[in-house]
Picture 1 (cartoon, rainbow, N blue to C red):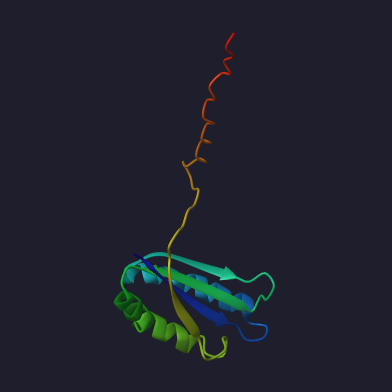
Picture 2 (picture 1 turned 180 degrees about the vertical axis):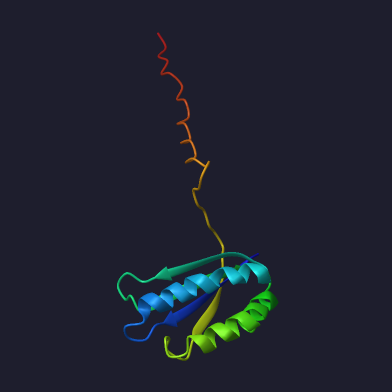
Length: 121
């Protein structure tokens, strides 16, 4: 089962747009470390809150990514653009779904046929 890691970044004042772009640029690097999927979201109500999500099959792959040279350099280069401490947490994904190119919505399940009412004479 894949594990999902949520990294809860919080940008410093007036740096949210540039920092969000930096997070979006570094996120695909996780795929080199065995991630199967990644996403970066900016909160609509609090534009300083940036959530990075990464799906890994093994926790050891996450730590290789997080403690790898690219992420160490990323955190050092962007120091002052995000608040410390950085919070991240694990979640088990128990259901997911999506529509994409070439995939259509499933056909609705037909109603079962009801037997005709027969009256005896």
